[in-house]
Length: 588
Figure 1 (tube, helix red, strand yellow):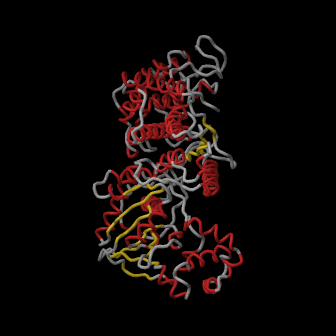
Figure 2 (spheres, helix red, strand yellow):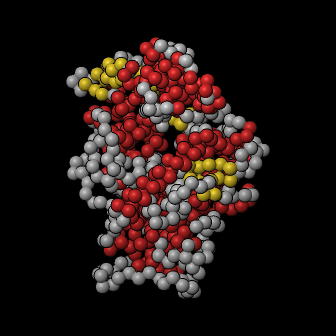
Figure 3 (tube, rainbow, N blue to C red):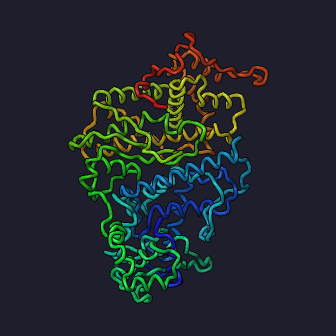
């Protein structure tokens, strides 16, 4: 993010020195990606098994901030994005397309499964991670990078009160903070150089920080906009904004050429409309009209604010909501890993939309943005309507959770069974006779499970999607009650059921998922799944085969039921399953 090459232009005018004791205002998203870089420092493997866990990301973030303060700096605020302007939609789609293309390239490079080699030593947080460097070729970033770090900070006695998901872009609030109170912004976004920071504030970039390990003194390039303007002989009031605009017009000119054009206002006079549009994001940034901390993940915050606190009348009348889901490492050859858990998110959208309806706005639809091959309007998700239909779906899901909870006591297993059950329903709807989840459980039972296969990674992504969809549901319930909204008795009971969902630090990962699947069998999960699937004899037979696997898997090779109409199996391929939660349709 930021203005291309602006930082490089201004580096000769920045001062490298020890960072004196000061108040730091931290750009949260930039912090998250810096922490990822710290964790991946020196890791050459390209496997998700070697990516940091959500827990490690959070622990590293807290350790990094602790050491910053031990060096004499004081963290006064950490701001995260909670609402992005509509004009950034195209940029976000392009980024999603690039992630999707990179995933396909990664898949094509190892279609038979990801590499098995990995570093022999366990990574730990160290100050060496401050050194400059880039990540080696890796899978997509951890999908829950930002909320995992927010969780860790909010659970820290030291940083909880300093961490806020704001109703706008983080850089807007970083700039406003130092403009009012003074201090230094720590970021990776060169846009911060263009905001009005006040006369005594400065900007430091994560990539420029170095440490003298002998003295615990931090050094960095310090960009002080007021000093830079003086050295370039341009007006301090708006000089850097005009300079940045000149660089946007021609990024190949020299700094002196850009400064000379700035002094005579060449670009701003030649392209006044473009300059006005350029300034809008810095002088009139889009933020939602709300002041309190919503205590939501950034993506949930954005959904809620779109629905209820649209900042303009035109946006408020827009009946389509956008949900940019975390990008998962799933198989490009399969349906998106988000598809199976869509019924849960329909409950989320139904609850959030009900808040909008209380404000007499139009009933919106939701477009989800997942893995993409071409620019689209996203995957349209029907919001349960009217209220009676929504209540039926809530009751159906509550029934499933109650049946699972009465059979299994381990909380992690309960949510994993929910994900397996959803995979079975999706497979039945698509006319498949051998759900991926049951195939992996079978492999685990006979000792042939390959945790580097794409099937394993894809189902892991499905389970992660289910866990995160449940997290979205829990947050939407909490948000409604915290703001004085009323819940039906059924929804209140559902909220109580999902209140035990683990935090992101305990979500399944590539390192833990194989063991979790083993525990499903040991904890009675298979019997529970058989009871949930009692209407589908073919599925029950597969589960029974997993419960009592053949002694010799080579001689007694498992055979899935044939894909055909068979009354013995109790269902017809391609028809929607008659499951208690099957009332929620699943589109292909």
